[in-house]
Length: 275
Image (cartoon, rainbow, N blue to C red; front, side, top):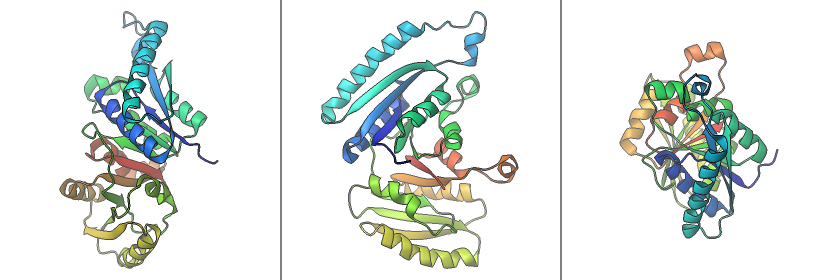
C-alpha cells in the first residue's frame, strides 16, 4: 500500500512529547508532509478499581482539545504553511495509536520516549518499546533531551549480512541537506564472511547515498548491543538507524532486541525500520 503524506505524532503534553511534537513539525515542514497529532486520554487498569480516580471523558476531552489548539497555534509561528490536524480520544494508549496508524497510513510515526519506573511503568507500560514490536511501519523515537532534528552524522547499525539498501529510502528522505555523514557500524568477532561483506557494502552504500559521505566501521566485540551502545556514547551521533526483527517466543529467549534497548537508552533520536 502506498504511504500517505501524513506524519503521525503522539502527544500527551509531557516534556518528552512536546519535544517530539517540535521535531515532527520540523520534519513535516521540511518534507512538505501533513502532520496528524494524536492525543490519547488513557484508560488504565486502575479505572476498574473501586475508589480509584474517576475519569470524566467529556470534560477531559474538551480540556485537551483546547490545549491542542493552543499547541497548533504555537507551532504555526515557526511553520505557518504546515498543514496540521489533530484528534483527542479516550482509549487504551497502544491500541489507539495502532488504530490511528492503520487509518492514516503515515510514512513516519514519531514518539517521545519517557523514562518510567516502579508502579508508573506497571500501570502505563512502555509505549515506545511495545510499539516497536507491534508496528511494521517506521517509527522515529525522540529522547527527552532532544529538541531539534539534525542529520549531520547518522549511524546505521548494520548486521554485516544484509547487503540491501532499499530499506534505507526513508533515511534519504530525512536527510534534506547534502554531504552529511552516514556510518554503517557492525560488531563482529573475527567473521571472515562479514569482513568481506563490509568491503562490498561500503561500495553499495556509497552508490546509494551518493549525495552524502559514507563509511563502514567494524568493531570487535562479543556483546553486540553493549558494544554498539559504548561506541554511540563516544561519538554522539545525531541519529541512530536500527532494523527491528520480529522474533518468535523461543527466538526471544536467545536474541537480545537491540532496537528495544536503543529506544530505551539512546540519547540520540532512533529511527526504527522493519526488515
